[in-house]
Image (cartoon, rainbow, N blue to C red; front, side, top):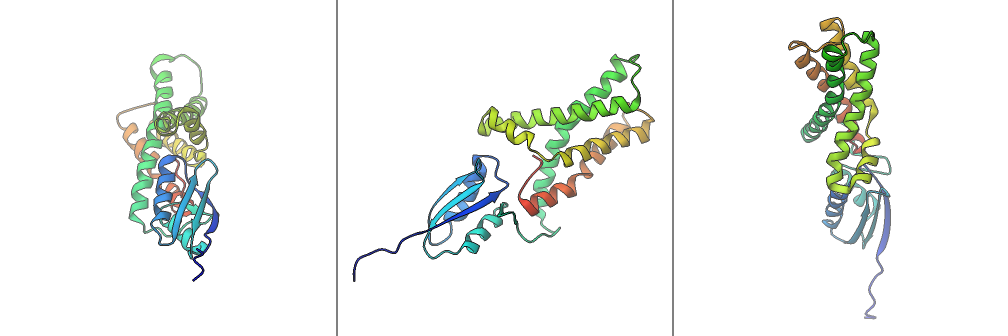
Length: 219
C-alpha cells in the first residue's frame, strides 16, 4: 500500500430559490446527508453550492438539492400539481403577500371613502393608487420580516425581487371584485371578505407553480 488518499472532487452548482441563511442551512443539510460528501459551502448571495466529495456524481448532488425545494441550474423537481407540502407552503406565502397588499390597498380605499370624500378622483384613479400602495406595503412588510433573518439591506433586496406577477394579480383581482360588488372603490362588510378570498385564490396556483418548478416564493 502506498498510503495515499484519493483526492476529493469539487463540484459547483447554481442553486435557485435561496433567500437567506436558513435556506443555506437547508441546502447544506441535504448535501451533507449524502454518503461521500465531505463538505459544502453554500451562498444564497451567489446562488451557489461548492461541494467537496468522493464518488458522488453531479446528478446525485443536484437531486438532493432539488428534493429540499430549490432548483439547480434552473431546473427543479419534475413538475406536478399533487404536492401537498408545496400547496401548504405556497398558501402560507400567499397569505403573507395578501396581508401586505391589503394594508396599502384597503387603507387607500378607506382614505378616499371616509376622509377625502370630495377629492374628485375617479374610481379608476383610486384603484390604481390602491394597487401601487398595496405593492409598496407588501414589500415593506416582507422587508421587516426578512430583516430579522438577514439584516435590513439584504431583506429589502430580497423583498424588492419578489414576484410582481403574483402581487399585481392579487391586487387587480381584489379591486375588480370590489368594483363588481359595490360599483366603485368602496369597502363594505360584504365586499371585504370576498375581496380577500378572491385575492388569495387568484395567485395561489401561480405561487405553487413558481415554488414547485423553481424553488421560488412570492414571499
